[in-house]
Length: 430
Image (cartoon, rainbow, N blue to C red; front, side):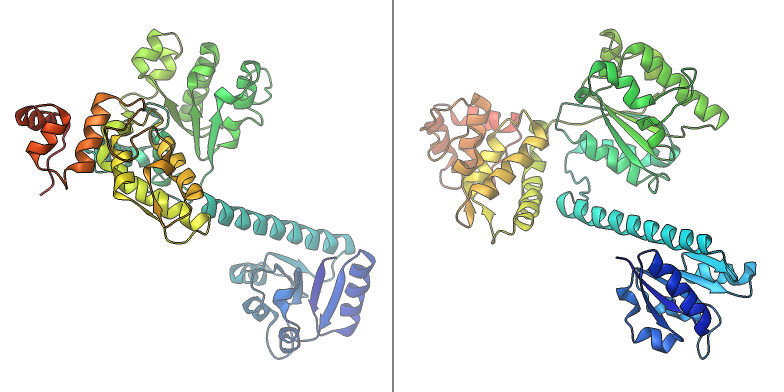
């Protein structure tokens, strides 16, 4: 049962409101002034109904003690000025005396619903931030740094963006980064997972029900109005529907009609290849212009493996309330040696699994489960490429063996070892 606090100095009005609300299943507590109301712990109620004109202190002062509780102000002196002042101070609504009973009930019900929705949204945001904290794009790779800089440079220009790269390379994070740095950051960010939808339902998901097959209804395109729509795997949308999407976006931009959205597409192939293969309509591709940005595979940006691993380790240790856990030197070498076909998404999963599996304070290669050597490199017995084997062996043993000894164990000359180090960007640590 919702609890209502009434702050009203006239006994007759307070009793009438109390009877009205109690008949409508509200629990009501009354007070005749602000000091009396404060003693009743106003933050413990679901809604507060307060007169503006009260003896001693004005009713607006209850706003200082109401925390997140919605406050509806009452006054016999109906004026725009008093209404505006109340709303500026934080009141959610305003009603003038004498008021209709139905009007009062509607006002209180509306305030309760709005407050409940606000509380639910705040709780959902806190839960999402706990499970998926915002992660800034941090990279030491020159190509990725250029991509991030380019995205930030065009973020406020409201251009459509095409992010291209292998699965799991962080395209979604880049899309979020673009949205967060744009003027649309307060608008909705909507993701369309087209591959997860039946082919017959893809267009309906995006466009919703149509009137005369033109105006968008309740689809994701309309849901993203004023914000950003991110489409995964645009090839799942038939080319004729891609043309419809392109025409709708062009019309919305030219005549300033709904839906006003920024489009970001996440794709594996570059636009030229997608057009050649018949999975991307040329007119939709034209909307992206030069805003086509690559996402570099993790195996080509190994300098990012260590900081990414450390970041995910901190995240999952905190999420699962684990004690202090670190990556052993062997585990770090194993992470560097692995080829990462699943890219950053796979790295995240590997670290999460290791945090859940480890029963000590140190993660070893065996906890990673990524088919790299556990122990001496010569005792592999696993499917490991020559490059990965070389990288793992060098990283794991260079602090214990000289260059001559490393070359001897690898069965190559010292010169060949040096040349391979240069080719794989593995300079010896000083």
